[in-house]
Amino acid sequence: MAKKQKYIFVTGGVLSGVGKGVTAASIGAVLQAKGVKVSIQKCDPYLNVDAGLLNPREHGECFVTRDGAETDLDLGHYERFLDIELTQKSATLAGRLLFDLLNDERAGKFEGQTVQLVPHLTKSIQNAILESAETGDSDIHIVEIGGTVGDYEGLSFVEAIREFSQRVGRQNCLFVHVVYVPFICTSKEFKTKPAQNALKDLRGFGIFPDAVVVRTDTPAPAGIAKKISLFGGVPEENVLLMPNADTVYRVPLILAESQLSNLLSDFSGNDKEPDLSAWKTIVKRQTSKPNKLVTVGLVAKYIDNEDTYMSIVEALKSAAWREKVALKLKWINAEIATKNDFKSVDAIVVPGGFGKRGIEGKIDAARYALDNDVPYLGICLGLQAAVIASARKAGLKAAHSTEFMPESKQDVVYIMNGQAGKESTGGTLRLGDYAAKLQKGSLVAKTYGYLDIIERHRHRYEVNQKFLAEINKGGLIVSGLSPDGKLVEYIEAPKNKYFVATQAHPEFRSRPTKPHPLFIGLIKAAVK
Ligand code: GLN
Image (cartoon, rainbow, N blue to C red; front, top):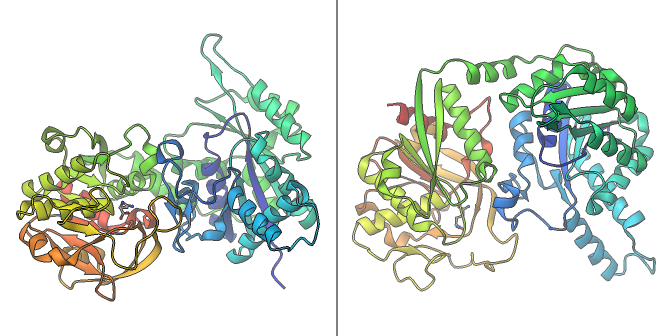
């Protein structure tokens, strides 16, 4: 029989986007630091089947798991905070559950029953939670419910976790509600009313929270916790005031020092002092005086929402902390980028992307870096842009990717036979972990320190090796291939000090405690 697991449910009130994901991840981190084994899952109530087709401007980055799930960016927080690799089962979307439910209905599996949100969808949600928990071999399974309690679309999820607590025993569940308390500038006071209402809503659905995390922009007086405790029916020691922190990686430390850690000890049955040395080191690295400042230009399509490139930004930051340098990110709008933009930075990153908009600016950025020996890291589309730049430099003036110019005869980036997917449909990309073999003696091999690589992927187009001679002539060599030699996974410019690109997404495996070597390599080169 599977071991008895416990569950922590993290819900949100008042509004979303105030750090529920970081709270859930930090609770996990504190438990982990005590030696408790944790697993974690995000449930999203919207009707998409996965996050693959969601607009990154609105939703932030699409995070990819090793088994190829296209998920919400909160899974990235979880992986970075807990240093674990999540799977498809860690991301539960209402759309997927409904899709399966309707397929079962069509397949006649309900034998004439009326299929309803309650009990059928709520049962599906509960099963998804159980299945996710079972894959983790954990003592405690954390479940974050996306959105805000009271949203129409989330009602089934709230009902499902209430039923779930009955099913596994209320004593085996801990409910944590994250609320937002605004500060009103004109009257200079914090207002708890929306939070009180949010707690009332939650109770109205039959969930009496064990703890409340109160998010504020600036530190709030203790009276706020008292008030929320009184009106929310939660003991005052379980109400944690959580103002914005200087870094999200301080949140586990704040949690561990608060009274909530007693609740976590009681609940987990583990009263060991958490070993937070790793978190202290990270925070210290971030807050200690850096030796130098490096400016990294991120040549991007979405420059108004940092969340769109969350994992890349986190990977750059972690590498900079490790190298004891201050990082200045310069957002360069790929659509209007000029040489002056590229000139003003110490290193250039061209991140992944889809669609034509801004592609010429990305190719120009790669060309500038190639010609002027500016440290360059190309990620996925950033590799493709570099290959196009190199081929054009070698004289293939019309070199392109068929993603942007389908009729191109100089299709240095193309869809390989047998890899074609339908352009606008979800789940048809090359997704998740794939292996690569690096060329001995190459810069990427030296940077990684080994030759056999596994990285996550999310792309459809490949480098067309028919044009290898031109690509080489422009200054790039292929330094890593898929094990069968068919797919280009890494390229570099041997004449430059650090010009590296990969078809993969190394940012997803970077951790604050273990920055990814390719990002460290970039920062090191930028410092020089
Ligand atoms: N659009 C490119 C492709 O599909 C690159 C994808 C990416 O950068 N993630 O191959």
